[in-house]
Amino acid sequence: MTAHPLLTELARRAGAKAHEATPACRCGAATLADRPDATVVRHADTVAKAHAPDTDPAGLTPRLVLAARIPDILLPPLTPAPAALHGRLVTFWPYGTPVDPDDPDLAPWEAAGALLARLHRTPAPPALPQMRGPAKAAHAVVRLRAAGPHPAVAPVLSAWRALPAWARAEAPMPDTTTLCHGDLHLGQLVRHPAPDGPWRLIDVDDLGVGVPAWDLARPAAWYACGLLPPEEWARFLAAYRAEGGPAVPEDGDPWTALDVPARALTVQTAARSVTKSVAEGRALDEVEQCLVDACARMGSVPPQLTASRAK
Image 1: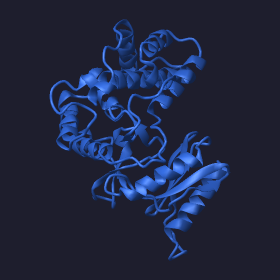
Image 2: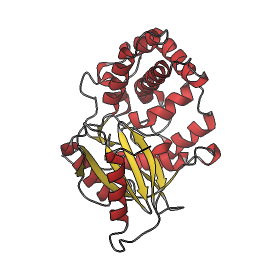
Image 3: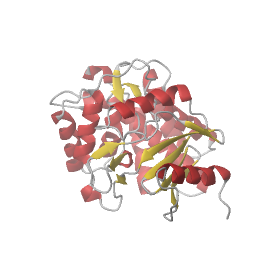
């Protein structure tokens, strides 16, 4: 099977960047991801990423500049600006060791919480766009509506309609000053320098200003759905608070801030799960059904709290 031109050229450019000083090499390239929204290739210690086709260079460039400015929090890019390739924007990064998905006991929850808190406490530069979390949730719901009939669609949409407008990307966020990652999960952490350097956050595509509780919402949602053990959630939350993270109160009930974002991330994940199951012509698996069931419960109990309570 012949690789498409983007993947072939991306591999070539990754190799050229990896061996700028010594052009000859035998190490070859490895495809780390090849999805409509991102194609990622590794060559030696260099990673080349082709961003989504609709990526705005005016939004990506200040995100790259910021990542280069805080290399103790975000993995810094190898080049300060994106390059164009087959209608896509391409960036270059040092390779970092990812979280091992097959060893959940080693999941770096403390590192994730501490890095997020430090990110949230970093002053945001004036040119930075809004964090894209709510927009991505809204996109997942649009795709769900277009996926076709399925019994799980109704409860997911009911939970979506119960959210405040800002969480559906239909109104400004109540916080437009705090620096946020926008799409935090364990796949967004790597050790750099590889293989066992300190943990760093990766993926700046959704970076921006907004409601910091959104960055805690995915693990919060999984905990609320019974998919993340309480002790792991407690480790993450304690590390975030210990570093002075502003998204939740210093002590006491964090759900005064997390309720709305956690609901939104539950809807987003459920919408993606149902869309995928429809496309593949299969039934929902146990985890996917758990998320849909959570949406059904949420649709009958409207959100009572907003993220602004955490400020």
